[in-house]
Length: 430
Image (tube, rainbow, N blue to C red):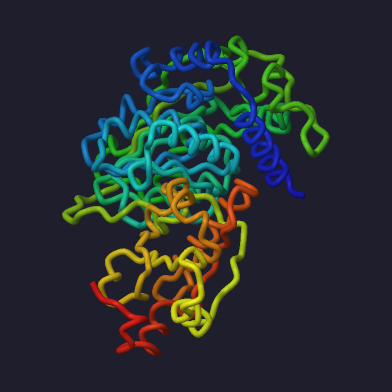
């Protein structure tokens, strides 16, 4: 395993563990207030979304407007996503990306508690060092809070290029990050705990600027890229015990690699690194309406675990035409939305895939007595199997309080209409 891979693995382990544990609300609030969050802001968001891991308050400086599209790189428990969502309103979109599966799970739980749903608020697991699952030219503002420093050197370059790609012309980034005052000594660079705790991965302002410029953030004015040192005391993490290396949190105790990451540094962190706000603008002016931020809408929901079996059209026809079957023996579900009117299986229920996952509890209550719940979409290669999988995963999670099972209609409505158009008991139109 390379050094970069070891660091990335240790960081992922640490933040997964942090998400699974309970953070002291008082300690997390102490850190957040030290880095500029107001009491009113913290009172307005889910308490568990503030984990005491910030090094600034990017939303306060981002000048977000109603209806804007926002991307948060490294969203953690969701603190900045929730604050941004209140700024852009119901017509805006805010997407949080995080490499930690447990952080995404926590953030989604926080969002569900406030009834915040995609596409208004979305959390997606994604590596920031690879191509982001975000539509090009779709984002008005990119936020990040004490995260870019955690990426390996090449990963920092990659994420800046991706930031440039997904921003609309004239779009902006507002990043809070830890930046080194001078090239760091080898003793810090080789310290795994220092990488996890946002120290060893810090680069100088000159190196940071180079990442931005090489990504495309350079215009006619030197004001297109601005660095502002906030002069905050980074020792507050250790005083409050919220740093991801805090032994009190146990999130960075002995890792899978056998290294103990909970050691407090024996030096003054402020002598080597500082908190900064970084601003940059993508040249140009956008004249078109922004597309949806997420490249794939289903990324906002958990990945499907199960693989429901398929039924052939003839098997479904036999269910429909067999008069001896009880009414609760099967249910057919059309997960298409706008294309439903072009023809569908007679008697099918329309449950659009875009909102299906959020409505699973109600769907279960309605159809849990149906032995066969049969899903389809256009060709049953995407939305249909995905929704069937989500339903089966839900059935598996609730256990024995049902007699239902998910299936997929082979070939989808395209094959159904090809074979059965004109047969009124099988095909219907809106």
